[in-house]
Length: 370
Image (cartoon, rainbow, N blue to C red; front, side, top):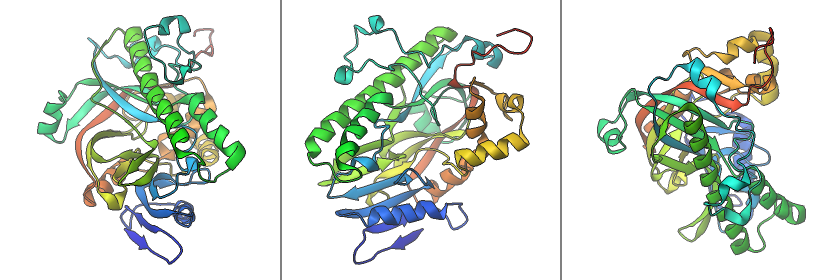
């Protein structure tokens, strides 16, 4: 864990073991953020990696509200829904997945109170590292806590990782077009719009879970967790910005691995040093361009559609298949190990993918079959 303090900068703490791979560019970004006016403390998580202008995997406390430290995907988060399905055969489930690039018909939304009245893209997953996954509880690591959540080994869950789509983007753009990376001139107005986007993200994840459960013939339970990792809150009188960091103060959080590895449900108990936060995933090890270049030299498309754990990936976008390959990410066990060693989280259960959906696979396969 590295500490740094200077007369002009806020303190920076990175919660990663000396052996953990953290890109120097990401640490440099933490120090750039620490030098901003009003910054108090920057906490880097073990999944820390460079982002556009601000690090991803960081919690940043300040007396000044900076919208760019939350980014455009306000309210992005991960929800976990228990599901019941008689038989989870990967091929059968994959074939029945709905097209989550197509939004829900507005006519079907009359019963919902839609935040900001923004129906555009509602019920869609988006690109990048977003996904919807049918997974199985592989190992229960804290029996008492798992029992409280009603989870046992072998149970199926739907994991939904997505955010506020175009709404969050519109909110950030409205700010940056006038103020760039500067502070919010009217924090209350930004927070009101931000809170709409956070609620929209929760609704979006719920709608996708319902669409998938309906399509695969599964019974959907209430979420055991739905926590967002791109947000800002007023905490102890200051603005706590999180970008790729989940609230870790008494929350159960799903920390996503990759589509070919475990993910971990953990109980977070992080204090002020860690910005009351935990990691949100394995964290990228390679840029998208690097992952594409190296992946094409090493893997075929078909190799990437079936993972080492026997799960299937639904992804019609070949470039995205390579960019999001498991090898592009850090080892999730290292991230979880770092959180545990610093006392920030306790693992509850691990999950393994059955089918991971990235984007619809609509291209006709060779031989004319869909």
